[in-house]
Length: 357
Image (cartoon, rainbow, N blue to C red; front, top):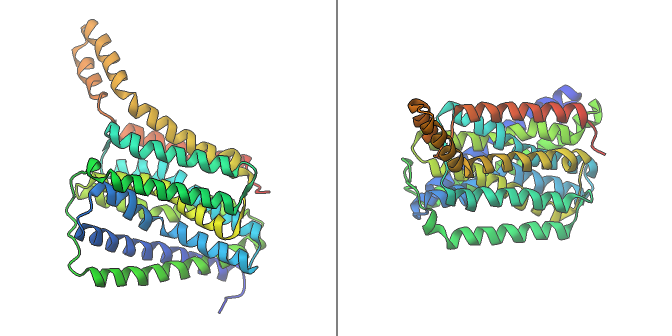
């Protein structure tokens, strides 16, 4: 039974969002143990199983929102804006704020060139494809089918090359009862979907009462909340020495969110795309990922150039420091810059793109 007043709906929305994230985290942990039981590699777990599991909030949100649009429950413009804002906002949060906080909390990431080309480059391609399809401000059922087809193709590619991306497996133990863990995962999925349903009913009421735009709520509130499973999983993975899980989860989730989440949702109902997502959110997501990829791929050349100059000038200490730049390593300075970039993104979003349609 619904509580009267915006305050009551806000409380229900907050409780639903927290429940959604916590339930998704339980499902993620069970999926990891099941995957370990069947001896899947760490990188494959991160890019497929875990990226799917940590994207459950976004995927469930799309299924529920699209179902409500088809059934005529709620305003389709608000539902489209909110769910798309939450999805894309989650991706931006992960690429900037979450990645930065994970590095500051646990330590830096080391990227192999092969991993960057097979994980990071497809992530950027996914964002560009979504932007291209959304440029006419509509994501049709055909667009959804295209996104889903690309997701299936990418997953197949990962499966067929799984032996080439093996990394150390961390310390988490495999499942001792796969059937039980599958059952718990299914129950968790039901809780995730139910939580998403109540969450969107609350968001619709709050938007109607306060005048806030759906995509802004999605980007600022739902995006941060939906990104928390990825952050938790990445931190746990690094602490357990499973860097492949952390990297695979953060990158794989940014591929799964638009391809599977937006693809499935638009296939079910068709979405109206808010203007800010086309002119700011998706371009910013693409530019952020592109800058980081370029930096990491060219860091070898930068290190070589700096070390050669320092050696000729007789600067021994500077030469040694510049040699460390040859590693594709994201450290604390880069993490601070990523976090700062997120707040710049948020400031511009709120100040210059306040309206959806």
